[in-house]
Length: 224
Ligand SMILES: CCCCCCCC/C=C\CCCCCCCC(=O)OC[C@H](COP(=O)(O)O[C@@H]1[C@H](O)[C@H](OP(=O)(O)O)[C@@H](O)[C@H](O)[C@H]1O)OC(=O)CCCCCCC/C=C\CCCCCCCC
Ligand SMILES: Nc1ccn([C@@H]2O[C@H](COP(=O)(O)O)[C@@H](O)[C@H]2O)c(=O)n1
Ligand SMILES: [Mg+2]
Ligand SMILES: [Mg+2]
Image 1 (cartoon, rainbow, N blue to C red):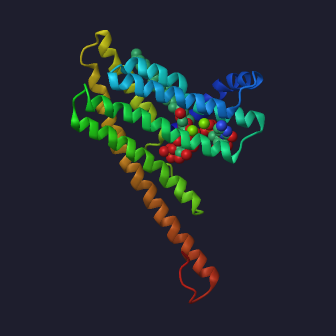
Image 2 (cartoon, helix red, strand yellow):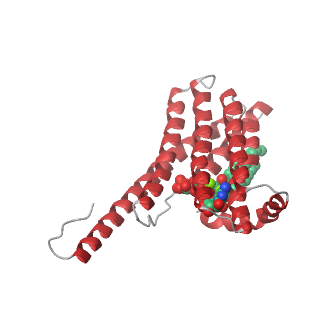
């Protein structure tokens, strides 16, 4: 949903910044790499210490690089398969650090095994949700579904909640409860999204196999 509706807005806002970086000689790959390094550092330095406000600020500054790198590549006319691969692969690294950071907090001073497990579930299910699309597309299917909770939703829900939860350290009482709520929402939403994508891939692969069998003629069996 955010990918569909918010992307156009952020593209407009970030285009002048992306153009400036290009004029300064910065490459899209450098933005992808530095952005990921910033997200990973923000998540793994601050979140395990329970510094959710500052962690979220650092991550938010760097996570928008994911919208800038592609924008730069398109403006410069240098979008590439390598860039697409690097972008998607490092997205997985950034997501792993964010939800890993939450898990480390709950495994340590946050002292809550259930929430640690929920954070690990968010991490794993998010990776699998992305994998379903990548693998489905790699076997020639359109995977014409995004599902309820895509990456942008996973990040916005959990980071907005982490930012607010961090206000606890500034004296706002009870606010830290928003983070567990957000993690549960992301976990359940990711599970629903996973089911939506698997069902779509199953239907699309059955249709593609049937079409291939029909084209090959009677008695030819199903293609693998
Ligand atoms: C006083 C309280 C303080 C609180 C501080 C809060 C500060 C702000 C908190 C949060 C901000 C979060 C911003 C998160 C922005 C995320 C942007 C982003 O990276 O989006 C990436 C996304 C996908 O890009 P790609 O096409 O490169 O990635 C593909 C995708 O990952 C696929 O994954 P899948 O969906 O399948 O799982 C992969 O399959 C594919 O491989 C991969 O290529 O980009 C978008 O979706 C574009 C839309 C971005 C929309 C961003 C919306 C930001 C909205 C609000 C931010 C501000 C909130 C402020 C709240 C303040 C509260 C006081
Ligand atoms: N280093 C990069 C990063 C991205 N690209 C291209 O942009 C597409 C992703 O666009 P986003 O707006 O989601 O960042 C990606 O598929 C590549 O085509 C690139 O070339 N180099
Ligand atoms: Mg990107
Ligand atoms: Mg990306």
